Image (cartoon, rainbow, N blue to C red; front, side):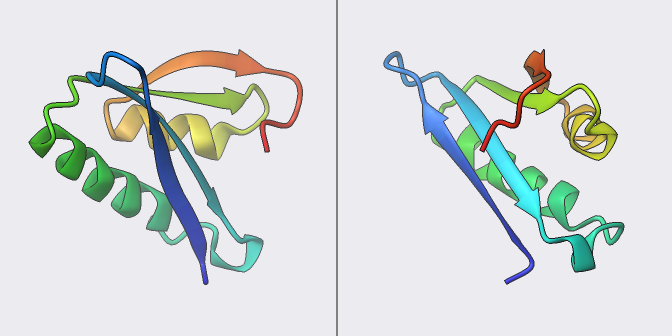
Length: 82
């Protein structure tokens, strides 16, 4: 497995927070961007209107994936998220 993407819906059902990770040996292959974009398309079909994400400040790759996919960063943090 190269990595994983997933999401959690809010109680209202119109917002989801996505999470993602890619194993080190697969970094730099655009896999997270492709997977998150696919997930975003599927969520739009389910009437999710807002997609957010969180990332460590130092995790430039994760922040860049969010930017490329049009995802709002809900927060940047110093601690590891998972």
